[in-house]
Image (cartoon, rainbow, N blue to C red; front, side, top):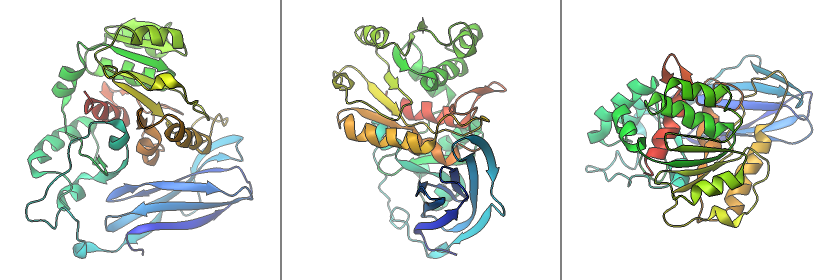
Length: 345
């Protein structure tokens, strides 16, 4: 039994380079962090605000940085009761005429937040009453019970037709790895902008590891010259750079002209589903921290690590991709990433 706030506990292992995933699931999906001390001990921290009953999952993703496992530790999940109940006084719900946050206009703000179960978001008045019906439509599309609520701005709900109307007839410049390629390839198919053959070729076919341009979407496969050539055409949609690396160099051309809607995707998490350990979330968090330090305040950063990490265990397609098409539908995290991007158009 705990109070709302930040809490931590210790994990002890036989190995110094294990990787754990801690998830607190209930009225909200709590942001968590696991710190390795290098001696077989780890400190796991989580932040929880909404009262209620939670399940605390402690999972091991990798053993000593060598073998992937993806397994709950013994006795996990544990039960956690966050006190508060009817006594909780939400700053918004306590007001007779609540004033809601302004709509999100940049990815930095939009990707700093938390996942809240929709019934609790309504109960504590965390979404405007005039948007409730539209959010219910969104949840039917996403086939999920949680919505993403940024801390300092408001995401506007959009249905399929809204998203298609925004993204069709726009040109986009993308670079450089498979995360952003799969997100746009899958989303364009889902929205009816790509034909199935284009999706198949760009996702896992002859164009998977090459530069391509289809229906206004230009993908540079680790090719900065191709990417910059696209940018010089002044796309009217997005210019997105995405690199999965431990180090983000402070390159000056990340700061872009006024007419270049540039977003840098950083730190998408690793679910550890391959038998051999390829990367670790600890290393990816270094990229996340480096990006915010080195890219400067003029660069808009989509913090995919903060956004996707609470859900990487059961809402991914493979080791490092959260977007794919399953039974004709876009996955939950893929849908939400496009919904967040749509706020910026």
